[in-house]
Length: 267
Length: 219
Image (cartoon, rainbow over all chains, first blue to last red):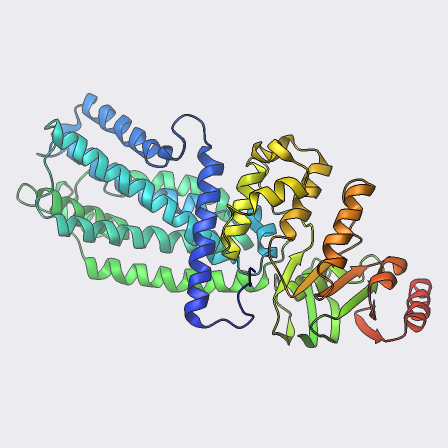
């Protein structure tokens, strides 16, 4: 019959169980969030696509073209897709432990599984949306495909890392300090226009450039844009700095997360 | 076997640290039926969470060489916007079993029929409880945890549960946590009493009853 996993599993068995739990949580979350009505789980990437599309049309309509030589569509798609990554991930993890507490009566379900499953959903949504929009717009000749695909992927993964690390840190902190949830929304709002989504660093004066590059995500956005249209623009970034910042966030986030998972009390 | 060794558990409260369990030692062997008695607030639910592994002790160690269930018929983990079937699939997924051949059993045992495919928010509390019990029977654990008397549904369903748990799974270990002496006495061979953070074990039911009775009236 069904033998449950042995009480003291090997590392491979443990990983297999964790994979199983994360998959189960993802399916549960996707069905809960999007339901089975109309297009169902397709909302996962249609929702971010609509957002990006709306912003693209808005920026196009406002004739923001004058800020750079870039075609507005490509500019908006790369910019807004990046925002989706680092802004939605923390939003999904803040306050995600409480509603899932009772699941932790199943011993194999841990805080990290709840976090990872939600991060994967956000990553998939934003990534599919980014790729789909690029292909669709390229088909209609509204934007061109990236000049250096590898660079775009690297930049995207760096932004993903940043988003995940920030999300885990804020999600874990929010368990102990309610104020995190209150502060994150206005903070995200303020950082959004500074994140490099709506401008390129090269248009700023020198001092402004140095200051703004302290924000880790802007390095990633610039890198992605260089991958897209490196021959047209001058990008400014320091990927080593971004990696360091990501690493610090990751270590802090994981430490805090381990602490709350030790203390978590299912209802 | 499950062995709790020198377990202490305390919680932060606004009044400072509150120690719920103090140096608790207990061993549950394979197939053994253990009852843990305690008044309201004696730390019974904390015991359940530590035994199931949902929570970690403040100090001490827990050794587990058999698989332990989640608290039997526990329905708190249901996502009520989802259907009973979705929740069934979730349980199957996290325990790594195939849901396809379980659907019929759950549908029949929980007496939900076609309601299994409806969102759980339209279920009555009886329907939810019946589904919760049926799901608890899906995984063949070595040891089942029971938090309070299992009284699910009407008399007929109750009988069905008794049969499924105490007859068909008579070879499994059971840990029943309750304040009801009669229920615990009926099903358990070893009795423990939880009082003021300490756990005392008894092999003789009368002795345990005597002790529990005194503990209730002491405070």
